[in-house]
Image (cartoon, rainbow, N blue to C red; front, side):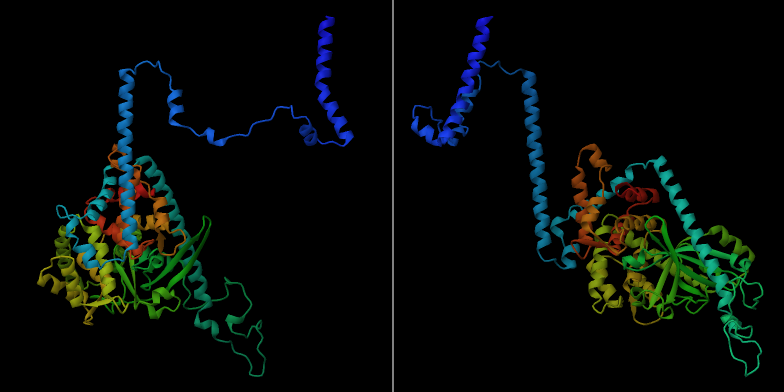
Length: 556
């Protein structure tokens, strides 16, 4: 017991000696460095050689144990599978890199003429289809996937509630505007009452004109002959419309119109939404009686029979000073009816008796002629519609050097020849007579393209507009390619599900064909986006299949 205590005490004293010695050195004025130089017998720490830490092949060979058991057959099989998977993955990786470098080279090189790019690419044609055609046709694969009915019902119910709320908001604003404006803007409000010539005019005087009197808006004492009543304004047809324009901002405006049966007048309002809760409803076309501005019915007043889904309403932009400048650039404002209150329309048709128009037979004949031309061209565009329609739009825009949107007969004939679209001479002559109704010798090339090739119905086009408006949340009319890449989802494509293609490959094929449709490599306008799906719509018979092609990758 005593030994253990002594040993502990001895060890403690030995451990404390260096510290006591250091104190004595410091008291004597010596530093630890000078003390170490005087006592050379102390061990010196060798320098660290970093070069010796580098791995060598000999050291690696020495690390591997010598007596290892032979690998089993199961291990060999797994190793072989791993080896083949690595090879296949490396091959796919190298192919993707090669495609990326090719796309970068094509972007950096100057763009060729449309004649060579969209039409003459004979070296890439296989079975009548180019590489771009085959990549565009990949989008039709989404039609094979049945859309989730439950989620579709929920989304459609929410959309219906939002649409009804919008219609109600606009209808209330229209009633408020016209019921109050009818009193305030009536000419009788300017007529002063009888008063002596010498008496002064006071704004609050009973002798002042009604317009300047201090009164409440709905004062019952004010009676005018032209005052509208709520019962008169209730006999109306409400419809939704869109502007036919290649300007994306104007094409995506939400317009709601009203046709009033009591005086055959109409008005159009624009509905704007800012965020989730802020909305505004402003007049776009003032309430008045208007006439057709082009076609067989030019100069005739709009009647109840002129309102149906797909009908065009034309206005002279110069007659409406409040229109945006982008719309005033064109002579005509063309508005397409996309939806209509069919119940109210049928109710008003039964009550009103309109005289039969002799022009209906001529219009029916015109439609038959154009339908025959469209059917003949759709057979030629069945699988190459995306490439031809997007190229056609760019080619016509290049021919329009003046920027008016109008081209002559020779330009359209040249366009059909360049894109190998065969139309007989008689059919072309008949179509030209219909389109050139005013004998000006020039026709809007957008109208010409819609007339001879046709366009998808308004149900399909509504989903195209929804997809673009989801991308263009700033409502500028054009979308950067980076935004499209972020929003496009190819997870549910059949080839991705089956493993034949990756999600990135489907996305790249879509972006390549969409970039080819655009005039700029870094953004896509609404007109180019619409032309892409217009060409894709030609080869799809059923509306629901086309809706799946829009809904699945864009999530709408």
